[in-house]
Length: 316
Image 1: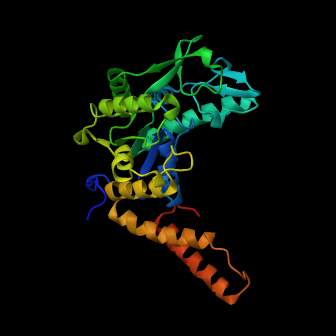
Image 2 (image 1 turned 90 degrees about the vertical axis):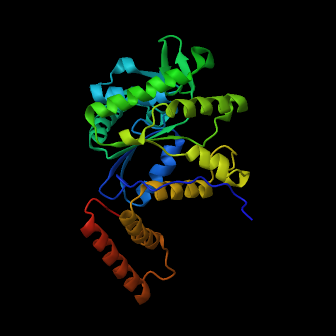
């Protein structure tokens, strides 16, 4: 008896992700989940320089500003609740010092352009089609930073506007990097603060728009994170305590699907070695001074050295 409907995924044959690949990840919360997996397995990965970006217009603005070499100044930040913030960035970057915030913004912009130029793969996770327009400046923000709701207008981006934004992101990236594979995915995280119906409408707009631009022959791909969560993991045991975000089990499941589709066979073999090393580094012995533990540490060091000799960029 088959108790689960499964999405068929084919392994990428032409440019799979390996340990020489450079992966840039931009977008919503799910980028953090996949990024943490890539970090754990010591891939060369760079994610969310401005923190989590929930909607495509925020991602487009980040890429545009990076390519144009924007320099952030006092006019781009504001003080609220004893912190300095920027409407283009997540509160992760907010700080009590305006100089520190400007320094962080400009450093991250410089890192972003360098990473985009060198990337072999760019993963873009789309969270929501709902956006907030700051009334005073008439601009759509990446994050409201808990400013009063009356300072913003809430809008739902149409399929056409979203499609145009995806085209803009692709064209901007292609202006500096023609070789990278761009992988779009819709986040399985439900934005229920918008409402149940509104969340479904938002996801539908994102899915309809992204499929207007996806074309594997042009290195533009779609990975079905949202569909895996909705169709293969349709049970609340696969959600966290908030019943909104995927549980660690669900993240592991979708990661394994991503690995099947996008990670090279050679890299998958090395991942097993790295997992052994990571487990060893996390091991807490009963007796650190015992001969058995000292021998364990010696063998662990030998495994680390063997991996680092093959891939000097890896550090534990």
